[in-house]
Length: 339
Image (tube, rainbow, N blue to C red):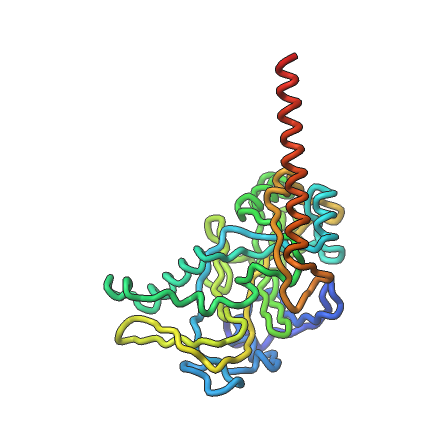
């Protein structure tokens, strides 16, 4: 990012829309890289230096892979029991009371991590031989420990997962008159340890967000390409207990044990604009098929959260009802055909 842009950028402050105890520090109209963010804002985590070696103490951060490019084609909306009841009862998702924004997060699993690892190696060792490639041990999973990669959630116990293409197609049909939604660079939000990059999605007929730059399809922290979100993650660890030893001569990397350090991590969120009073609709069957339970993570943002077994029992009951309804429909169809 250009120095003059950083100088003009102002950190603003607000409380979280759903939890007034959570403070948000944010920069509008830009996805600011962490190293640039440090020039205009600091806290006890963000102020630490990342070393090119192992860190001798907790006040510095050992070397880790960065940036790492993830390509994600699945998104999820996580909610509490009250939110679950509201979604199933209304047949879809509503935007926030104040913001009219509906929040989704990309899903990053083992396949996405393995692909990101391969891209990292290809970028750092473009002339790596086939022998070196076959001898390279998997390493990235040692570092992908932040909440961005966890199955558990701080936002609720109930996760609705869809392919990003399905979400965008449904959004286009319901809110864009069949046109393609617009992607914009919305803001960078700093919590205590988390840096969140928000991508805004809205109808081309909505002009309230024209001041925000359009999201590109190449460089930058986030991009959109062919139905997938590209995220160039800069901080992927929750607690840094490993460090990456990059051997330029061997053209391989090795994971070593580190003393440990706390730092920030970054995440990506998609904020879909849903007009006030509107509902982003899905069929009852699709909602229930997309639903899974997830365990609670600390610290909880949306309270109260429940244990995983309790959440799983609720989901099982909901899915059993769905199976019963499908069975009843089949029986009715057979009766009709027999008359």
